[in-house]
Image 1 (cartoon, helix red, strand yellow):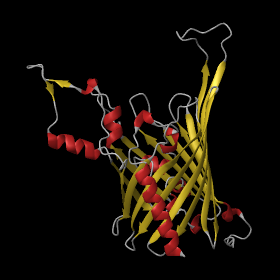
Image 2 (cartoon, rainbow, N blue to C red):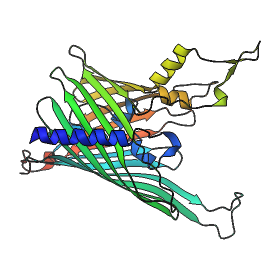
Image 3 (tube, rainbow, N blue to C red):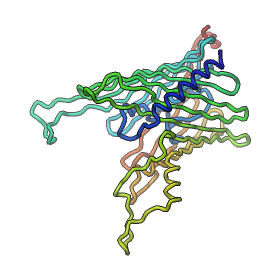
Image 4 (cartoon, rainbow, N blue to C red):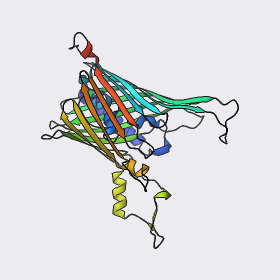
Length: 359
């Protein structure tokens, strides 16, 4: 039964990888909020996905193969103070059923704030009113351990998006698998946002979901309280660069535009797929995290003042029965989003702490 199930999951993964092999990035897809980093822990380590298997429910939203029985009755609440009036986050709850696996239900949202109606020239009409915009996803996640080395998982996402009077409904799926080495090394492969729009904002204009293939690895060192994490993003597309005239560097003497060597160009394209993170864990109740996202830095930096764009940091703190996390990620000189979360297990507050997993 286990081998048959894993074969089915692998077949689905391969099928949708082929179907989405021509997927693009940037502004060519809708529901982009699905790929925003929600968890402070993930954001502090530079990306939107990690392969850390230590029973953190907030990671399960982005990597369902890590949902497991140790998360039974766990709750995770996450909030992001983004730019301007924009905020987003999610709430998750997990429960395990012994015969079929572990589940995590999440409500994910982004609120773009309120806007004032104007005409095409930007002038306010006399009867100007306001409108709102937001997107939501109900995510049903499932994970199961196949044996001591492998686990698999999937997310089913029902998506609703509304911008003023324009709205859209979509359906998406994540499929992932994780390898758990006995040495503490973990590797995860995921295909995210496989699916399509069911209804479109305007008739006849169907947009793609933000499909992405990612590979993540992590390992906690044996003799140091440190865990490293490496994430490879957008494996379905090699060239993530774009043409930006502002990046042209002109030689002041010859007037010629300086160009990168072939080796430099290859290294730049390769590094745009790489996100590096680290987690220092001096005690079981505290951890400090750092991350670096090369692609974010290249796309958002300002040549005259690069600052810390592309870097991120955060910490985790356990107090009594609660786990708190905070992160700050430098996206641009205009500001850095703040990520907050609180997690706890309902079983810790029950009269019988050893509540049995549902049969």
